[in-house]
Length: 177
Image 1 (tube, rainbow, N blue to C red):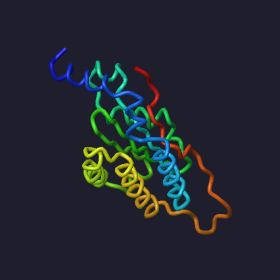
Image 2: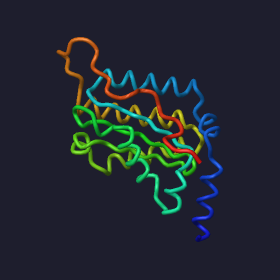
Image 3: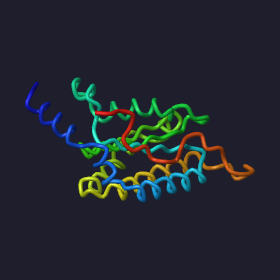
């Protein structure tokens, strides 16, 4: 194994579920869940937040990156399976302080890739400083603005809009160590 790979492997093995809970305690997760719910009342999109402390071992062995994992989680969490194809996954990998945003087809057609990258770049400092909740709040607000601009809620719709995906952030992802 190359030295860089060993360093990366160790960094990922040092981050676990307890670190994720310290970075985003239950109160922070509840506030983020409410922000997602409030956002989704304003547009027809769906927002999922996924925070993983580290990548699964299988990803590390093949030197996969956070983007590949985010795309996998986008599928596993069924963000691609919304009625209007305008779901968005906000993915945070704590071990690498990486954030990835994966948008479904309909929204991806409306928003240039460079815009997504500038949004991620703007949040990077919050994560580097350990302000994970603030960084995720900024991400939710930015995604909300895009969804409201491109997929506003139908003003004539009666009653609450259907919620296709859970609003609660997923902490820990879908793997173990």
